[in-house]
Image 1 (tube, rainbow, N blue to C red):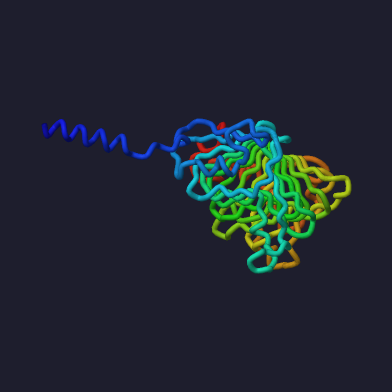
Image 2 (image 1 turned 90 degrees about the horizontal axis):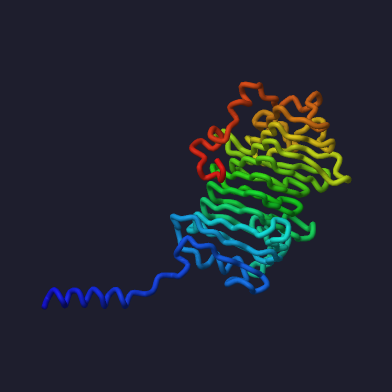
Length: 325
């Protein structure tokens, strides 16, 4: 009798437990702005994802324009946001640094202007556009990253000043077959980031990169087999300037258009930066790749040095988190 009572008690306990979240599985979530899927907003799909997932979950976003200011929080992992069509699946917002905050009436500042902020680790974006379409009234970030092991495949990042902010030193980012455009310092921050076969488009005469690599971090920005191009009116573009003294940027096997200035790099009006900034080039082609007039504090790698620039060396461990590796 006692055994039967225990069985009945256990059964009652199971039956009265709350039902599992129907989204706690590896299935794909679908988002469609036109209402043809379960979710109309990307943020709603992100909200139902379980914290610290051990499986890979896909949020598939159908073509459309999604005006959303998004955060993927630090407790979400292993999420992939995949667009139906890179050029027609667009996440957009329009904050800029000089908009006044409602709570303080002070300017918003650069680091609150993001369209998409990624705090979680092991997040992938594919076939999608992230845009900050604010007027040119201040810095305006499209993508703001803080997580580690982030992958961006066939994405577009559209903006003006400060389009892509790689916000935390020691984090590792991988961009492949992406398009990134902007005006000034439109790829900036302290992370280690590898850009493979990306198109980098300068909209005006200014600076492409503003790395703030920490002194103890061996690598910062690496552009491999990228295409540097520009609008017709952009004819005087610097490869970069150091936002912090030890900024690291390398262009290797890239095609550089004629918009690249002969001196290549700028010291941000501080000659002390010339003693510490780590600016390198190797094996580049195109009219902008000529090195005869480069600043004497930049460096051309030797063949041996260039051979050590590999994903495994740069990211300091195995690279299974990079799709296709």
